[in-house]
Image (cartoon, rainbow, N blue to C red; front, side, top):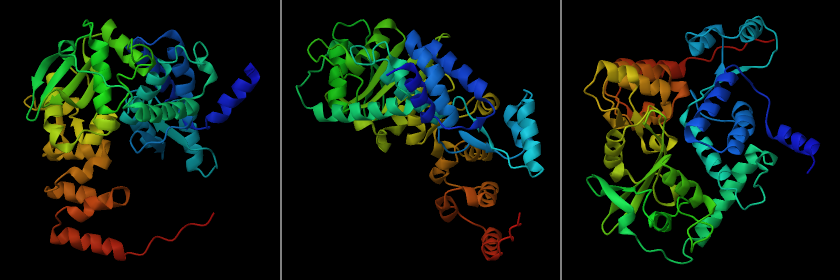
Length: 395
C-alpha cells in the first residue's frame, strides 16, 4: 500500500470533532507512554492514531466526553487555565445564533479512555513476528481494535489445546483475604512464564497466551512477561482452594515507585464475581497505588475517594465499594463523576434524594424508582410529570 493510500485510509477512519483540550490529551498520551516504557514505534503510533481516535471517535458517558454548552461551562472545565480564544469566540457566536460546529471536552485520564489505551498497547506490543512488525503506522485505530477482538476470540478456541501445570515456586503469597489469597508473580523465577500460561489456561484470558507454548515465548504473553522481567510491571493472582486462579490484576510501576492498576479481570475477561469484591478492595488499599481508577474497578462498583475528601478525612480508606459512600459529600461526588454507579447506592439522605430528583432526566430511572421519597418529593415528581412541555421556538 503506497503512502497516499495509507494516509487516505487513516483519514477516513477518524471523524471530525472540535475538542478544546486536544493538546492536553496528546500530552497525557505521551506521558503515559513514557511511564510505561513503550517501544518507540508504539509511542509514535499512540501519539498519532490513538490521539486522533480519542479526539474524533471516542464515545463515553459524561463526564468522560462532554459537549460544551456555554462559556461558563468551558471556564469551569479549564479550571485555572485560560480557555483558548478561538473556543470562547465560537461559543459566543453560537450563543448569538450562528450555526457553527459544537465544541467538546474529553477527559485525558478517564477510565474509558485508559481501558481503550490498555487494549491497544497490548495489541501493538505483540506485533513481533507478524505482518505488522516495523509497520505499525499502516494500521489505524479501528482496525487495530478489530484485530485485537478477533485474536482474543481465537484464544478462547485454543484454550484447551495442551495443559500447563501450576509452578508453585513462580509465585509468593502477598495478602490473605476472606475467600482466598492474593499471590504475586516472581519476575526472576525461571518458571514465571509457565505459571503465566497456567494463569491464562485457568482464567481464559491472554496474560499468558504465548505464540510458542513449548518455550513460552512470543504472542500476547510476551508483552506481559517482558514487563515483569524488566520490573516495569507487577502481576497478581487471587487464588482459592488448591491454587485455583479467580482474579488476575496487573499494574505498571511508575517513576515515583507507585503503581497504576491496568486491569482487574475475572474469568473470561469478565468482572470478578461480587463476593470477591471486599478482597479486591483490600488489595487496592494494600498496594502503593496512584489516583487513576481503571474501568475494571468501576465495572465492579469500586471507586477511589477523591483526594480532597481523603485530605479532610484522613481515617478513610482511599479505595472502597460504592455502597461504602455514606456521606452527602461522597454521594454528591459520585453523582457528578460516576452517575452510572448511582443505582448501587442506598440513597437515604433527603439532600441526595432531592439532588437526584433534580437531575432525573439525565439519570437512570432505576435510581428514582428505588430511592425512598418524602411526601413533598413525591408531590414534586408528580407535578413535574403533569407539567406540559415548554413549546419549542421556531427558527
